[in-house]
Length: 160
Image (cartoon, rainbow, N blue to C red; front, side, top):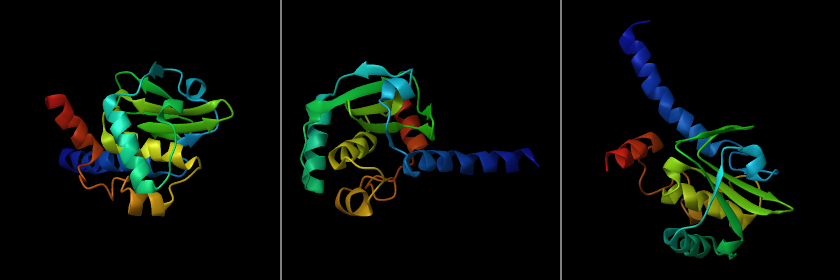
């Protein structure tokens, strides 16, 4: 294999890894609270943007909930983190002890990623029902108005 062929394969593979990280079955939810499943996650607080995004997600979904009931965690210094289901950039968790969201730090300010996990919290169920994630709220990479792939978003964010 030539160097240019290998480089081309890597350039195609990188976006696929990110899409799989966001779109796989059971991609965003687990039954064990995040500190147990993502030991490197640190407790975090929601931002003023999160309050606005929560309202937007309630509005588009027609669902309501309490943003303050979510425990937020961030995995410092990463664009993705490993879980029992593979690499993720966000992870929603519901258990008998409450609702939690873990975010890779490099995506903790990404509206699509944060609102995607918020919608999981509002739905309170596994999976990605297209009615909510694609049609009502447009919270998938394919349905989001800015279709810039995650790795390009990350490159742009590090330049600013």
